[in-house]
Length: 113
Length: 113
Image 1 (cartoon, each protein chain N blue to C red):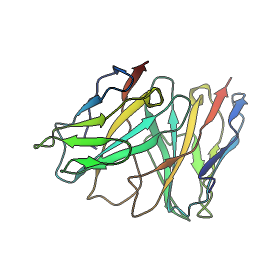
Image 2 (cartoon, helix red, strand yellow):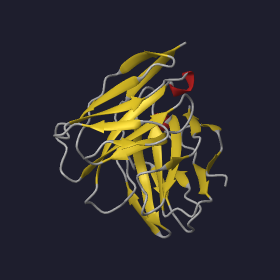
Image 3 (tube, rainbow over the protein chains, first blue to last red):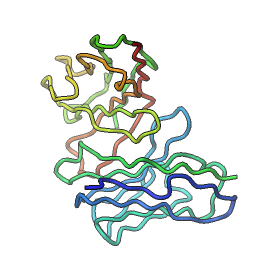
């Protein structure tokens, strides 16, 4: 199993540009989520999904969109990038009946200039 | 979600035990205590979780106070690879399973050779 994969690893955007961060898992996990981590801080939940076709907002959803058309993929879209969205983004997934053990991807480091 | 309090940083010597404390005085009866850790430049990884009784696994032990207002993560023999940020997280076991984790600041553990 590849586990949770994220692409790209690094990205630089200009203010106002849009892009999609990709997240995929091959463990047939029902739950997937996106977090952001600012320097020296803990992770904050952006959006999450409890299954294909179902998404909901986390703590800091503004400026981001998600969709979940398949069990495997959970892309995160930045609609109009702002410098405040400079951060490291982590995707995570878990089984429904073992959601205490979440698996995190390696992260995408995004810089918005 | 109930709040946890952890020391900002701790130091340990290699091959010695490490006790990482966590206070959660407002814990409710249905809250589980979870620990994750984040190695430098990586995503978080699950360590252990428990409800009332002490728990052991291959990575660590979790000691929970009788009144559940505090807990301690125990690494029995610290190695250099254990240098990481350790997060103590409370999750409501009675709420719908959404896979959400609420991260605080965590404890940065330094391990000295």
